Image (tube, rainbow, N blue to C red; front, side):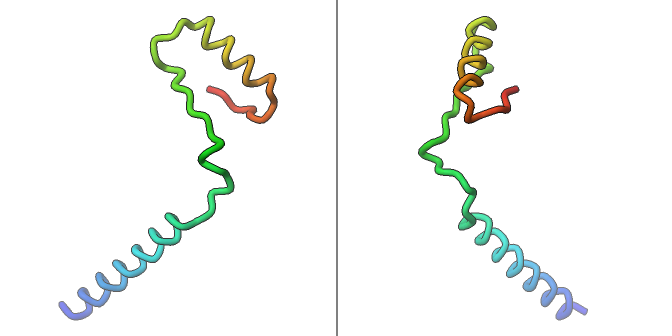
Length: 66
């Protein structure tokens, strides 16, 4: 019984390791150097936040904003 459990655990570990390697090497379809991250939830006036959102929407590349 212990031998069966150890085989199952070893097999599961190998499978998880393969999946993690695949995920870390997978092409995400975007270039991280071309991604802009702007923290919108810092203490910035709401009007300035809305102005920034509207300006970014007018550029056209990104359509989703919170």
